[in-house]
Length: 114
Ligand code: 5GP
Ligand code: ZN
Image 1 (cartoon, rainbow, N blue to C red):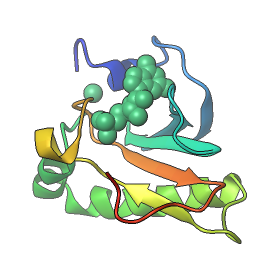
Image 2: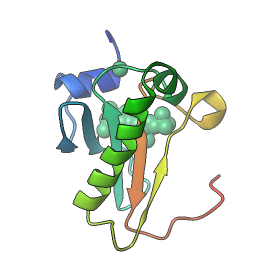
Image 3: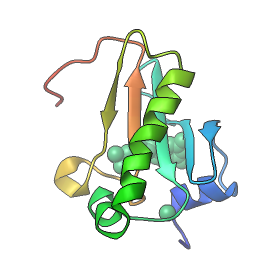
């Protein structure tokens, strides 16, 4: 989508440190990491948030979680575990309107989040 930051990363017009990709998804390091490993996983095709993606392509929402697991494996997080976060909307803390899963690991995560 024109003007979307994460579409730009998926298309390669915006630089990012890409750690994993396939035909459908791209994973790259968060610019402001909140853990030793902090990767964002996005579908290449634009959807604004999880609610929209689930409504239009629930199967792709499921495959997004499989991509998260593949990224976590690639980042060496299978043993220690990791946290997966999908923020939706203002109260959810979403700041970029292209659906993305945060993969956080490499330290003990606290609960509840702030
Ligand atoms: P949200 O708050 O929408 O759940 O998460 C958006 C995430 O995108 C934030 O963690 C933020 O640090 C990250 N981010 C924002 N702009 C950029 C960017 O230009 N490049 C990268 N790699 N991450 C970004
Ligand atoms: Zn987009």
